Length: 267
Image (cartoon, rainbow, N blue to C red):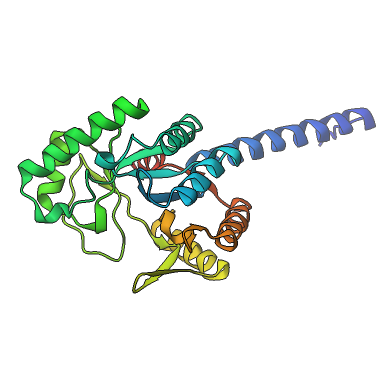
């Protein structure tokens, strides 16, 4: 049998070519895996955005979202919003920076206790108010007190609201293809009587990790009043929140419920 011998230069060329091909294959495989693997997304949902109440803490949260380039999901009580110019302008700035706006009732109503027609009226008026004041067409409903029923879902369909964010601790009705539920999975504080107690960072980080195991995402719900003490902003609580956000950002990306919904429907 005739043997074919390669010169040293040809051997090096073959090796280099093989390495290039392998590198290209590995790069293509990695790119494919990245396309198939969803990002690790967290939503920070801030409920009870409204005129005058807990103003210092609202302004802290809204301004912090802009300064830190932190996307939030803002639950606006539409019928109690728009007269407080400081809160309004801070909310506008947050929205321009990427935060989304959710309908948190008109007067923070118990939606499940209302007939379909009234629920639909609330969504209609709230959407118009948010569009007029903030220039966005909100499709997200954050039911006050996590209270809603099948009529709520019907009202959402009629008023072009496609996302509802409740809480995993509460019972939920059957949803359909037109309405997707992306509930809050982690509560930042514990309410004891009328007092909010922030959870430790370790507890929140553990709950976020468990949320990803169970749901593939995490949504942390909080309220301005959780950072309110003795009639003003609780500086200690504010510093704790900032430290927690910075820690979470080492692993996760903050986003909106709208983006989570796109991720869910894409797979």
